[in-house]
Image 1: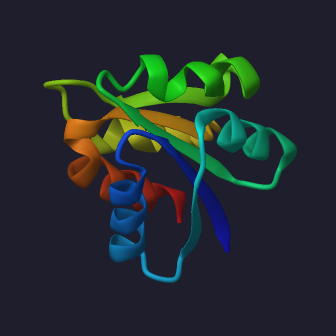
Image 2 (image 1 turned 60 degrees about the vertical axis):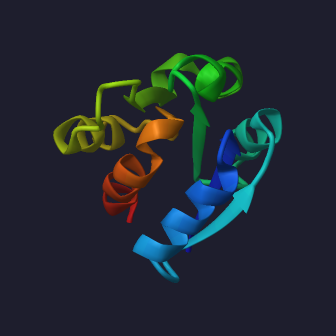
Length: 117
């Protein structure tokens, strides 16, 4: 079973959304940004998903510093919804840390987890 760490704003909603759209498919834990990033780096988690108001700054800054810029990407920004083809490309490239703005959690998380299965 793949393990996902959720961090940042609305962690509870992200966890609930993942468990609702992909029941039994992922083990989801709520962490602060540093804990989640370090757990991905060490192999204790498979993926990091962070949320903030922009989807790029606070959602990913620690993940980028710990895991690396090339392993991180923003999937949704304020006013710009997640696009399935963009998410598919990021996952295919090997990205493991994803950021999004809180306004898109209910739209973007189902698209993302569909590609992480």
